[in-house]
Image 1 (tube, helix red, strand yellow):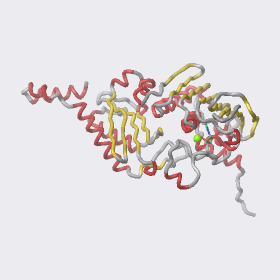
Image 2 (image 1 turned 90 degrees about the horizontal axis):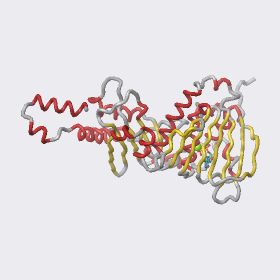
Image 3 (image 1 turned 180 degrees about the vertical axis):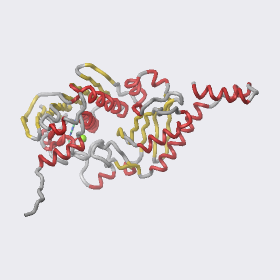
Image 4 (image 1 turned 60 degrees about the horizontal axis):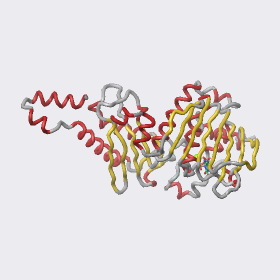
Length: 355
Ligand code: ADP
Ligand code: MG
């Protein structure tokens, strides 16, 4: 007798959920990205108990049609792409149609939503893949998604969660990247009822200010490079303002917060001469390339990205960052003219570098 089983949907959805929903912060990221894709410009994020007990995202986006609400929870249900060609030109943050299904298979999720065409809102609540309740319900325009009891009935997963305070700080880090990335959206973030961040949506500089404060901004320099197929803009640290870890590095590619070790290493190399041991540069860089020049489908969590023209991109990046560092470290001409001794010139150079 054959031994191969075809898994039913509850089992494979839960397996697939493992790739999308690793921990509470993955839920926050997926839901905020859904709000951004829905063209929301005001988003609020509330978490309690490290996100394990409670996550709520409220947006003023386009909402979900009443007819689509149950469908949105089916595997591979998406309004963002239709066919294989669309995969080469992804303009939205989501496209895999996995987040809602995955979350619904490992937690209790409720969605209350209303489009601009609907007289009344629609509501659905699902726990571990089973519909608990659905129907009409009064609400404003937009969507509210609430997630509770993450991994409650899945001990194999819940035991891999860190303690609430650690999960909370991972969420806070993710939210800060989302605020920096989606810097034209007003995003409010609260933990256990206390507001942590409230961004204005006034651009990258203001978002950095919201998240890291004034001293941070004062120690950053802006760069901008526009070519037909590539735009690089953002902020890099003044040479002496380095940090002992990579927390302060945010890479945005085509509007998406991503992690790319090649790019991070390229920036590191630009600063090599100025970095003490175990120090890292600080940056918030937005790179924009034609959508067919990147592959965001490297991992289900869409945090990694591959560039088709990686070498060219790194060359350009290296050139512009190096040029900016040189500008920032150059010794003013009048100082050089006044000093006759080469020793003094050397000293001046050193002080300018280390200030
Ligand atoms: P994906 O984002 O990859 O399409 P999801 O499972 O995250 O897949 O969402 C499924 C669908 O539900 C989306 O394509 C979208 O149509 C709808 N949706 C989810 N969240 C929202 C939201 N906040 N506002 C409007 N529509 C939403
Ligand atoms: Mg999504």
